[in-house]
Length: 353
Image (cartoon, rainbow, N blue to C red; front, side, top):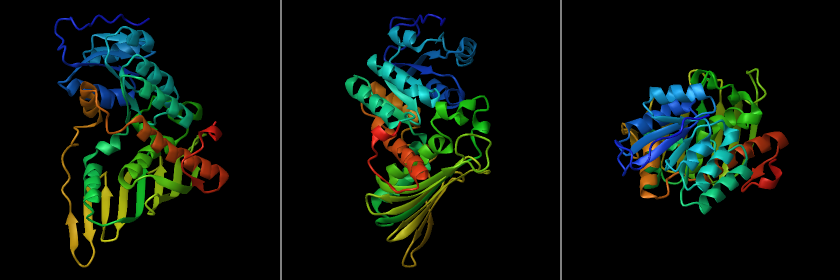
């Protein structure tokens, strides 16, 4: 049974102007990203963590100097002591927890992917629409300075209209990132393999930078892992703008490879997240420019943006609908691979299950 939370707006030592935040799920992503970011922010009182493993919840709470922990997220939400939560749980648990938090008018930052199905994503979006709180999906790559700068260059039209795109997002796999989290390769828990895990980053980036995908043809397969989920996926994309693109993602890429080539009417942009670097090659013998990249996100990262949005009660830059659009690209590749047919958008949610 979880420890009762003892923090209220009258509790000594808390700034009542600060956002009262909690984290549900205390695994690798919570410990590496969410908890440190909340702890760093001067706008937040990190009041609780929740995990079904009581010992783990207690240990993480102690490590981060958090006064209270829970093993039951409903009990935590019903305490009334929390304004906002990060949901850092296995993918198949997102929908129930997110909807419950939104029903309590608690702002939610949900880890990607939004869910394991478009039907669940729709339910989460509906819950956000009915709530006085909002839903943000933690598509972290949008907040990487190299992609923020790329977006700026595209909006300024420095290479003219985009004609074609090559986008690759691959790394060695989940074992190095989160050795304990075997659920990544359990299809019932994760919803898939590399495609839904890191391919959803790639999907969100192409939507963010180049607009909606109108159709695609793709393949996903298990080429080197001993697992029931795919370790590799590729696709050919057509965007609503008329531009064409290729999409690649894999868990068996060591060293990691996260890069883009963007071909426009007046030049080419080369983006490398790993380096990181941003190179602009202009046509008509105008030469090559190495574009400076800011040291940090203009939002100071996804968690800080979530905090500021929650304090202002303003819609964040990555909404539930954005999360669904990224998942839709992922699901379309799965469907195309299974049927060996081209898939058109928007997808029919009824045929998903």
